[in-house]
Length: 194
Image (tube, rainbow, N blue to C red):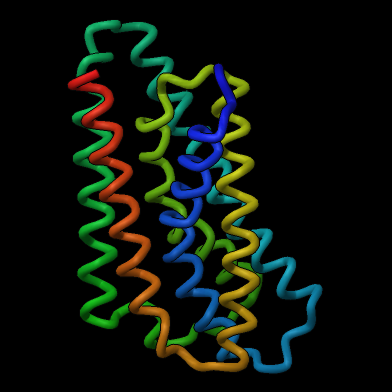
């Protein structure tokens, strides 16, 4: 696996696209706790980052296992990636336009934080389809980059929520959805035409 600039850029863009739901929730959490300590910011951001990093690996493992057992499925991976990322991205854009994300801050105990982590990372499971041609090292590096990007974006979201309010959450969700759709199209074009 060649871990070059293109690989790193794609992983960063996946991380940005996937982190937008978590960013929106982080902004709402920041609004809910205006006196949040830095250690709490790190915990919340780290929780989102962990889920965003682990879910693609689970998806990758499922796809690699299925494709390894049935090589015939390999030709369908670009189609599946396009459909899943376009669906998730489209839903994010729709939610951002309708302003559903971040409209009601949730009181954040540990159970709520874990629920938010799972809810905002379910879409990251589908990234396993998009990275199915990576070897183990490539998949792990990609997941770590996604986790790091998510951690940074969520920390920014929490701080922004504390200071600026929720006016940017719908735009972030629209931006994240557009990135996921573009990545799905890139994977489809590479997989089908090249």
